[in-house]
Image (cartoon, rainbow, N blue to C red; front, side, top):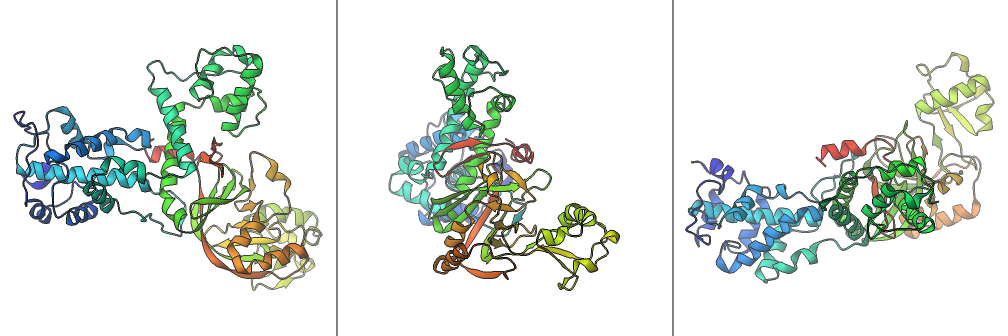
Length: 523
């Protein structure tokens, strides 16, 4: 039988009950690894490195290492509590390990089992530290792959020092937002694991203290200690307000349709949202440790700036509406533009501005717009035959000059992407006060654009101070200031997210993307 076929049927063939412990074959591992195809190993490079570091000794099948193997099996059985999938980690091997007294029938099976146990341990440790999936983005300008930990080398150290029992606790991320998401995940998992669990269907009612499905749901979400607890109207209203905050809704204790809709999302769906978020927090861990990084989350319409894994700035933003969504991406902020022009995108110019201009050519000057020909030269709008133009015949560019009414405000933070989106200031600040901030054409209006500009420019931040002092200047030429520190930026899409205080909240699936993402990952 070939190595490949035997690896498929690993230990499911003949496991002799006469053996109560696995046979090991000292000195054989190096020879075996040299000739092995590794087709059934998920992390071949790391497995090879692991055995090179430990001088090709058995790490799991020696009698003195039985406790380490038992703990490895227990950890992998608890994969769900880490937001991971137990079947990812050599499932047939662990099925055989748990089903009968573990006894590989021969030398080959012992050697192969040893490698597969190591592969499972490395794979599991990697996923706990760095995530088990790459974040999906529409444009990946960073090509970021987390690599600040070497799972194989770390595994060898903990086994060699006899500290395998401490490994997960010491290497699992410790950031407050990670702990908060994992805690919420585990709470919901415990709820659905109960024998009598069933998602309830909440309906609206004025007297919420007698609304049994509502009280049961509040218990399932962790806001009540029991599903049989009796509350007066004031206490029930206070708990409902807490739930409304969890769902980023107006927290007034009124059971309106938006609250009912959020409450009736199946708990399993909330678990899937939390798993995706937990994985992303792991995936971002290396980048956040090493430098500044800007992370935008579209559903929450928020921006977080991290410095060496600590949130140092949080800003509300305004993202694209459903018809003009903000794209997901990764890139690098390379420059700050003071007094930016707004070059109106072609679709906006032809679909939104052109009808206004046809009705009233004075609309251009009234809104501080300029008309540029195909050579980039400013032309007199009075010389243009606007009536002859259309969406299919528009040889001009419209841009808005600087001033108090410029759509980009006083500052624009540039990063390359094929969608022509960016972070920018805005003259209209009132929309930042809303919970749901989906109003833009795709760019991200940033409430704290000036503060973010200071971080990016560092010693050149005096330019921001000067800008603030002068205020908006009409027809001021743009000033481009290269970024002192080129800060990575991620624009992501998660309906479960945390703020700077590590508070977990759920948000609207504004672009109807969450279901597609869950389906893609089998959640």
